[in-house]
Image (cartoon, rainbow over all chains, first blue to last red; front, side):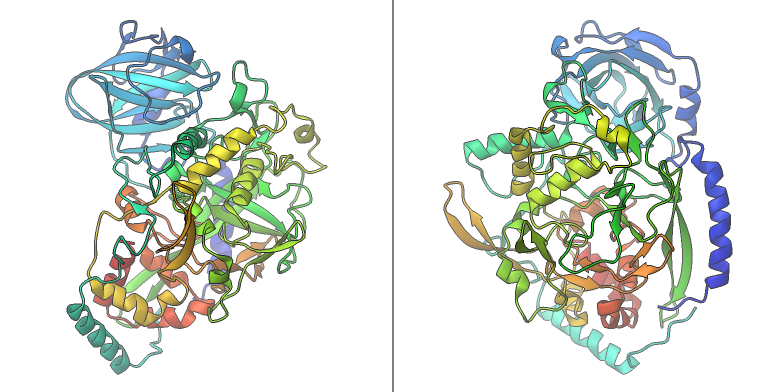
Amino acid sequence: MRFSRELLSTIGLLLLVAHGVARADDACAGFAWDVAHERSVFATAPSAQQAGHDVDSAPLVTTDRLYDLALSPQEQVTLAASPGKKALTDGAYAGLVRIKVASAGTYRVSLSRPFWVDVVKGGALIASTNFTGRPGCDAPHKLVQYPLPAGELLLQVSGATDDRVKIAVTAARATTAH
Amino acid sequence: MRREPRIGALAVCALVLLISHSARLHADNSRSSPADAVGTRLFADSRDPPSYAPLAEEDKTRFDLGHAVFNTHWVPAGTPRAQRRDGLGPLFNADSCDACHNEGARGRGPQGDGPAPPDLVIKLESAPRVEDEDAGGDPVYGRVLNTQVLVGLRAEATITIRYEAFSGRYPDGQAFTLHKPHYEIADLHFGPLGAHTIIEPRIAPAVFGAGLLDAVPQSAITSSGATGAVAWRTVNGERRVGRFGWQATAVSLRDQVTQAFSREMGITSADRPHDDCTPRERQCLAAPNGGDPEVSTELLDAVLAFQQFLAVPESPRRAAGEGAQLFRALGCDTCHTPQLPVELADASGQMHSASIEPYTDLRLHDLGEGLADRDVSGAPVQSRWRTAPLWGMGYRLGRESVPRFLHDGRARTLEEAILWHQGEAAAINERFVALPVQARQALTDWVGTR
């Protein structure tokens, strides 16, 4: 395959390098999805909450708000369902919150850390449909997308390597890659 | 830019007519019956991937534990209560196997311009490459450029990818675009890379069926009639066939897994008692460890068992037989060998012969300068690639909304991946581009159901 390109390629590369220096400063640039809404939620002041150690103690959170959750040692937490991903939990932290979804649709759970999260309804996990993330970014770090029914659901963080995590639930927008 | 057809139009028409006729006579007979080939299973739940065969109770226990270890996020040495899972870093690329090989699958790879994702690592190798010898890594940065680091240390570098688009045309006038990656390595903590270092971008490969590839007899890879080259490696004075990794640099699943633990997660094992720290990286060398070794032999054996027994996901889709006929007629099967023999132990430990359908010959092939690695000066370095297995492709394409192909994820479709094949595959590439658009589509559709 032959392409005549040397000069244009060199000029293009120089421009790209210059552009890259500017973008590399923002660790939260380059998400594969449009995360503008989640980024704006993560730019707000979080509401501190102690995550529940079981279903009954799980506090209620709402969509489009940022929460700073305090987690508990996982051995002290009674999870609502077995986590969707098996993992060693030595030294892990966990916690639960409740969320009321006003209308069925596709929602995103965004977290500041790469911790495992499940959505639970009636003791059963709701399967996620996609995820994305950005190394070095914590506002947010990871987003998981779910088809959620209307009503009250549980969010369950488990296997966490730290006892704090910021979390927000938002209605999904486009997930198209750049 | 218009391509010049190298094959006469009549010859191509004859080929397509022959294939179309043949396809009508034979339905998709390219898939052997389940009795003939082993290894594939339906993955009903991606989070609970099955073994390729029923396991004895002890193996099932190790498989399940290994799956948990595979998913486990490792933490820094000394983390309270962490017990079995501390020892991450201090330099690393990801904190779990699963972060790059999600549920055993290949890394998603770069989705466009921007920072390199964790599932694309930059391996470093000292030049010149020498057959059958491990030339070592960069003198300052080691085997892998580690972009993550524990608190208090600095990462080795940042890596940004920019794609340069090239347009071309098939002889039938249809346009195509390829994307060539450029890697911007910045913020190098200890100054420039070695003057003779080769930069090797690599996406995390799928681990599905790894144990089955490990069970292919060496004689099936070294047979004299095959094309390409055997990836001979000398390990502890013993000459063995490399079969894992994009260039078959690892001689066994264990070799591959312990390399990844050490170089990409900073976790030592009994086989590899050191992290990827060079003498220049004193803080790395002095960092506390999470045990000696950091991944215990029990957990290493378990994660190996998980990958050894992990099945290959069956394709949920089927395609017309025309693609299969084209695959053979063009010569794709010369390297993407449909079947290989394996020697497997059953649940009772009895060895038996079987076959698998990985669509690889586990041999090395030069695919031309376009795909070749580059040294720090940007000069291409002759690169030979292990034929990438095609099994599991149908499952992948069913899961991934933005799939990426080839060793660095530059190809955005199977068609683009084929177009990048040059070197030993140049003649096959020429036959592919000379096909009518419907035939090209039939071929890629079929490959997408392996």
